[in-house]
Image (cartoon, rainbow, N blue to C red; front, top):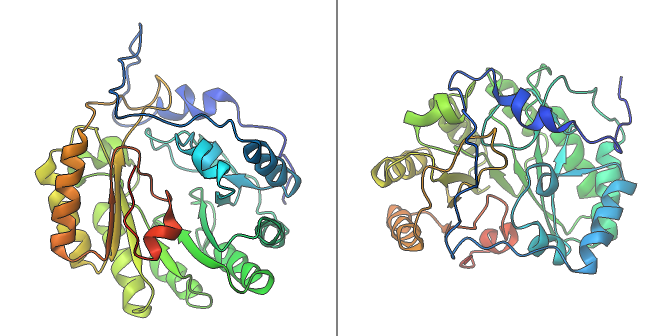
Length: 321
């Protein structure tokens, strides 16, 4: 049964130490000062009054945003523009991904009012483009696909002109069930992030499978040929550029149309450390390589995130960070 805990943020240890200490690759926190970020890593502080107004609106409608829950460095810029990526199905994830700041634990029941609340908030915000993502819900038989559909349907009713991008989890072992459900209400853009190179999956995405994530994208495209498919990667966790290029090749082989590539930033000392800060020139090299493979749009820069200016990317505009 759903429990209203919107005003209770998950404890910090569920988002840090106790979240990652049981992962197969152990993280040893480093004491002392954090290494200085290079001058090309700059996040804009949330000073605009629109930020507070948007946060208030989100609370009033009992919603969550990945902007806040995942400590996105672009929150000031995006909230300042009156946009957000909504995170459905609660703020507790069933996975322990050590790069992510979303809390891990036993989720609450689904909120049956969330689809309507979400649609009403989007209508009040007068958004023309929204991104809907979620925590992993391995506790649900359909992994949450039905709730995605319910949210899409309510948004379509309340805001028929709003474009909808969904950023979905991997639907572990239930891909076919989930995709069959999504056929009832396909989005305008389908997004699933690979996050990293396969060689680092045990460290970065424990519990996920690289091949299964690729198949998820390909199977969706087989049934929805006119809906763009999108994926995202983060750099700085020990991958080589050649490994990243191979992932980009794999994505195109599995019918992915758009891609985002950005710099990983450590949310806390209990999360995976940054192995290196990738230079903007390397991001540009990857952008040119991805474009040569045939991606319709590539956003590749240090501060790029999966949902950063998603509306512009979907319309084919070049994204810079």
